[in-house]
Length: 151
Image 1: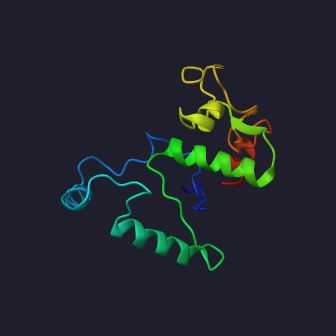
Image 2: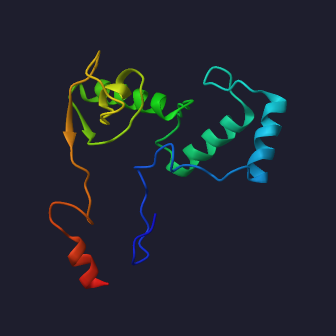
Image 3: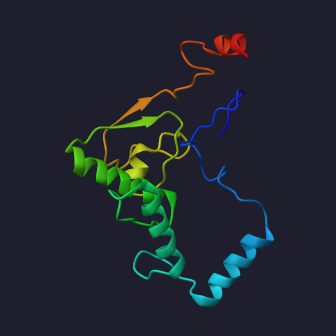
């Protein structure tokens, strides 16, 4: 993601509607078909060649202190695992969740999903604090005007 001055940012707010790689791109379609010819069911239980290659490349990129990868089959599962690991690491139970943030509908991730149409108070397993979106463009400090003056 880039701002109006060309500064590069890592987008941590992507969701199911923003991670698309296009519709029927030939390279992607071929890669999926090639994988389907080898093995359709992919989980952390049955690893594929590409999962191993990707995991090694990721660890190599991150540095020597990273030597393990846990691949998940969905964002909900990844968020659920991240929340579990955060709780285990910190010993804390309370979590923060962005208002209108969708984090999944399973386990811990359902507990911090904070969209009225997707969240219920039924069986929430976590206590969480609802936070406003941090936005330099529309935030409380009204920094949009400052950014436009600098442009």
